[in-house]
Length: 275
Image (cartoon, rainbow, N blue to C red; front, side, top):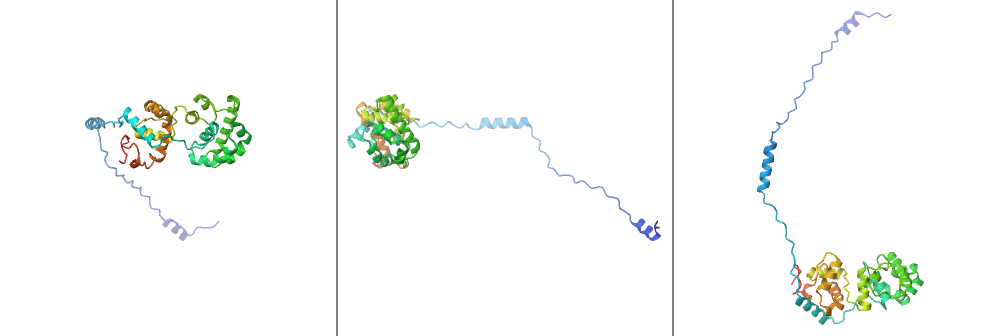
């Protein structure tokens, strides 16, 4: 067994470990909390709330309703400028008119006309439309928006006309609305243009003119329709929706209305008109 020499013992014993000093914990300096009295702050808030003026409710601007004389004057001007207004959808008979109106949903009349000129040359009856078939019909109308759905509706309404109405376009709103793809506006257009009924078709143009001018304001097309039927004199009703459509399409434009050439700018209630 190896012996430990004195030198080794001295070396070993000379190494001393210093005792560890206890770590001094730093006191976190925290700002003094500001004591607030809940009762005092609540009272102050209540007091300031009472003193603050209450905002006044904004009054909705309601335009002055048109008088009977003003309505008669407006439509008298429309009649003088355009005695026999015509719809711009090209058609050959009630059936092709019905198809054209169904195709015109979310599309322009000009775009529909470009597609239907060739189509109506070969299919001017429900029977011919069924014989053409949905696939070939799509080829004719593919330039029109939603053409797949519209092609399906046109074939289905053609079949329903043959099955339920002897191949003829019916003469009542309810019956026309029962056809696939046809709604109230479609029914009103067909009844007015094909059968001379005093109906009021409200499209985006008529809706805008009715609200902007104050002639028949309404939140929905039906409200505007009923409002127009209430105020327009009977002798103007047959052509009224055509005058309003054309007025909205070419004069009372959505973004930049041409107030300077408007026939009824002195009667219009629109507060932002430029004349």
